Amino acid sequence: MKRRTFVAGLLGSAAFAFGPRPLFSAVPRNSVWDELSRRVGPRLIPVNSPLVASARTGGAGSDALFKALKNPYYLGDEPSLTQSLGWTDAWTSQPSVMAIAAESASDVAAAVEVARKHKLRLVVKGGGHSYFGNSNAADSLLIWTRRMDSVELHDHFVPNGAPSGAQGEAAASVGAGAIWGRVYDAVAVKGGRYIQGGGCLTVGVAGFAQGGGFGSLSKQFGTGAGNLLEAEIVTADGQIRVVNAYRDPDLFFALRGGGGGTFGIVTRLTFRTHPLPEQIGATLFSVEATTDQAWRALVARTIAFYSSDLFNPHWGEQLRFSGRKLQVTMVCHGLSQAEIEAAWEPLLGWIGEGKSDYRFTMEPAFFAVSGRRFWDPEFLRSIPGLVLQDTRPGAPASNIFWASNLSETAQVLHAYQSAWLPKDLLKPERQASLVHAIASASAEWTVTLHTNKGLAGGSDYALRSTAETAMSPEVLDAFALLICAADGPPAWPGIPGHEPDVEEGRKEAVSVARAMGPIRALVPNAGSYVSEADYFQRNWKQAYWGRHYARLEQIKGKYDAGNLFHGHQTVGSK
Image 1 (cartoon, helix red, strand yellow):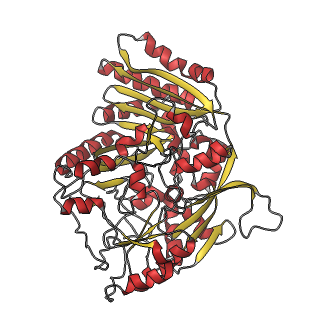
Image 2: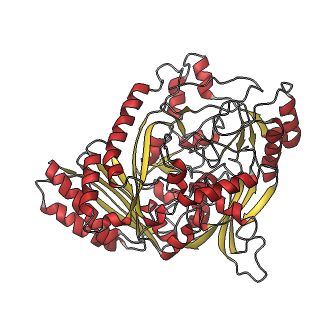
Image 3: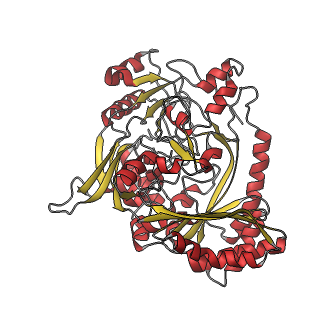
């Protein structure tokens, strides 16, 4: 992996990676930061990376550091770090030179004005979960929105500029630096309302919604973008705009799925909220086949069962196929535990009949809880093995994250590919082809059907609201997003004992590409989800946005003609 050199100092030459962009201006060493400091005061802070410090000292203290890197709250609270540390042969997480710990839209506007004036490379970090590395860049100014994490509930929210007499609706306004775990606690646990957020509790709100944004119950409630009612954003001219369906509707369209950090810097978002489901539940188990023939039969039975019994607004989440092993992690709403158990009896009963062909590596588990308890940190901590805790001294007890997300924390990605699977593949006459593709792919590498990330089979609301966004229309026709990915443990160049394993990364990337072969043959022109896609995607404009790309490019030209906001595979990048 090529390593970019971090320039230690207050000013350096800008190294821009994408699209048409200006060169860094030659200015006195401290004048830019002096000017910015006068605007934002102590919120302008130097960025000191523990990774850079460890590399400079030959790895001193690196074991303790790399243990700390497995805590997503530490990664989020440290402006120099990102939730992924890089991607083999693509990028390595690099710290900015300085950061603005923004507390208001005015702070962001000051940063944008100074960056435009002096041609500074800008990056923005909320949750820092960008797989493409767009929330970090060497020699840059970071706008760090972590402190902007307020949550305000509204009984009757009316967007700015709405016609007189417009009827308000229940909503929640959320600061751009908030993460979904804390939003759920405020809106669902304490407020008793449902908000369509992400599955991962430490994902940032702003990037999530701008990319589109799926959660476990998206088949019912749609995407984050589809539920966005209004946004406050700082555009490249330094203006603070409040945009919605009535004010700057073109920019509002772009913010709903057009990609994060592309059209400006979002500082606040207001989402529609819904009645909280009385019960939210799940089914968890894993089963292994003893022969190839039994495995293909299990894949076929699972696809047929999903098509006939789970392809509806109640169910979402994952069916994972790996070797000869099926792992089920499915979430539902509106069903009691007895109803959940009954729903799965057709598949589990069939598995039980073939006792010599299958064995459970995790026995089936079912549960249903009150909607107010599903994201309640205190309740979740009471279930062994479900969540992990922020272990830093003095960390709030509410700082939890799903144990299943631990492997992603500070990962180095080796490969990541995704493909929308159209609902026609569930037709009886096409299921055999789908089964063959999945079975063949899973012999090479793990493939997972994220059934909540395709809205076919979903509610009318989910389909209608998402159709109004900038996301690819393929999401409306897809029954799932198939993901095939590989990653390694935390690593960073120059730190002895913790160097990235480049050769292993390349080897696994080949395996992922081989596994995706049968899927690409089945759906040769399948698009991808911009937030979970291949860094090396060739036809990315079509894959991420389809027919909407031309409109998005026009909007980009209107609000950011100089391409101040740019990143890898973002609208307007070349």
